[in-house]
Length: 323
Image 1 (cartoon, rainbow, N blue to C red):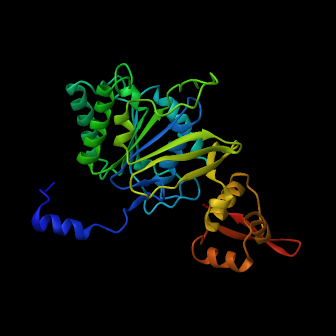
Image 2 (image 1 turned 90 degrees about the vertical axis):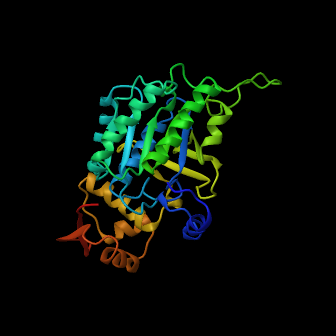
Image 3 (image 1 turned 180 degrees about the horizontal axis):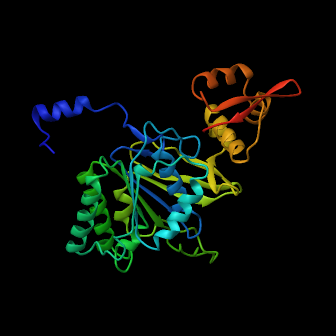
C-alpha cells in the first residue's frame, strides 16, 4: 500500500466514490468490519450463514437485500464439528442455489489462541494457502470470535488480539470481515433487582473496532436485527425477519421486500411444493398487477415459469422452473 501524501493522496481522495460500494445492500460493505451478536440460541450463526450462502450465487440476501455480484466467503468455524454447518448448508441448498465454489468452510483454526504470535502466523498461513485457489476474498466470517482467544474475551488484552487480527485480515486480503459474537449476561437494576438486557460481551475496544454492529433479538415472526453502531451511515437501522419453519430460512418482512423479490420468494415456495399456478395466484400472493407480471417475466424473471398447456377456470396454468 502506497504512502498517501501529495499527489498520491490527492488522487486517492478524488477517486474515492461518493458512497462505499456494498457487498450486501444495507448490511455489508466493502472494506468494513461488521459484528453480529445475540444471546445463546437466537440463531445468529444460521442467519449469517444464510446471508453468505445467498450472496455466494448473487441472490438477494433474506430475499430482499440486493447483492451486486456473487460474493466469495471464507467461513472460519472456530468451534464445533464441521458436520453441524454442513447439515445447515445441506438444508439451505434445498431452497438456495448455493455456489459452492464461492464458499470455503475452515475448521483448522479451532484451538488457536490469538494472544500468541506463532498462532497468529499459523492462522494467516492457512488463509494464505486458501487464497491461492480462492481469490479474491470478499469476506471472512469468524464464528464465534471468543473461541479464538484462550479464556474468552475477558480483558482488554484478549479483545485487542481479536481486533488486531481483524484489522490484519482486512489489510492483508483486501476484504471485509463479519464477526459472530455473544452478549454478556447483563446486570441487575439497582432499584428493582431485575436483570437488565445484556450488551456485547467484551471490553470497550471491541465495539470501538467495528464499523457496524447488529444486535439480534427474537420477535413474534422470527428475529429482528437492530443496528447498534453505524460508523459510515450506510447500514439499515432495523432488519425485521420472518422465519419459515418449513425451509428453515428467514426473509425480510413483506413490507420491506421489493416486489420482484416477493415474486421470486413465492415462486420458490411453489417449486418446492411442485405447485402449478396461474397469474392470478401470483397477483393475489404478491399484490401486483397483470401488466407488472408480464413486464417482470419478460425481463427480470425470464425463463422462471412455463405454460403447462392446461387451463383452470379459463386461466393458463404455469409450472415453476429454476428460481
